[in-house]
Length: 103
Image (cartoon, rainbow, N blue to C red):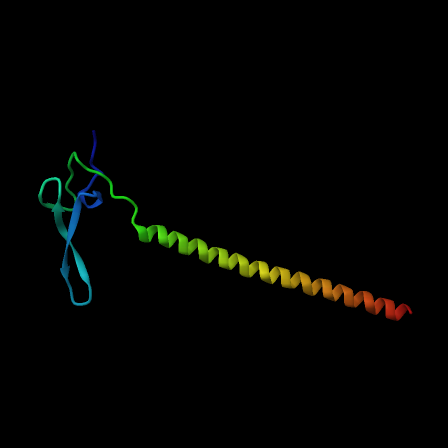
């Protein structure tokens, strides 16, 4: 079995180490493997690889994007409906003017 794409940084049994920087924490190139019970590099492979589940913020970002698209579509619909109402009112005004001119 070819497990060349199964790097440790993608495994649920791997926890990366962080170092404190000036403004944020920085990921290191090593971490702790719960399976091997030791320190491993990000790009090592092993037979007990299990992929990490999708992180919550990815799902949330999709929800935010969809919500933003729905808001934009609703705004476009409101503009179209308002334009339609204005056209209907303009048509009624023209009909009244025609009736007044004929009468």
